[in-house]
Length: 149
Ligand SMILES: [Fe+2]
Image (cartoon, rainbow, N blue to C red; front, side, top):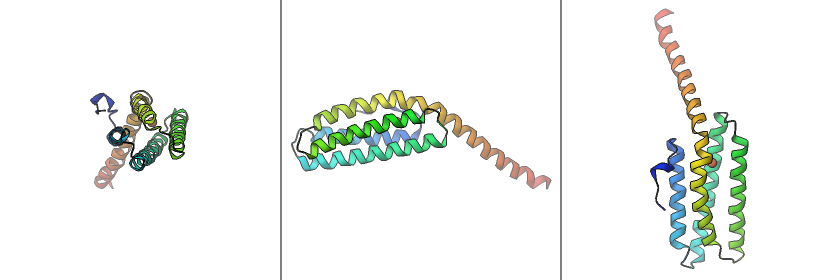
């Protein structure tokens, strides 16, 4: 899977994390047919851990900007993490789920980025702008005060 410009949502830190997840998915793609269970397990664990911390980061950001659809967005993340952990469990019990996991991840991630994540971009941008404006006003006040106090 190659990163496509249309996957960028325009928030750099998030785009960077999404690309990182895609790299992990690609690594899984490379090892999924090798039968090297140790290696597969290692990548699977890294991928799940990283995805979970990315979700936490994203949810934190959305909370800070008071994103009104955070609860359902969090719900989507939680459900997906549950599915990933179900796969992990099945793998640990000896099943070969790596191909299914790869398929799920590659489809799910792009779909999530292009729809669910795209929906919060405006909210984050608007909030960042008003935050920056407040900072400017504060700075402006300081500058103003220097001349008139
Ligand atoms: Fe998300």
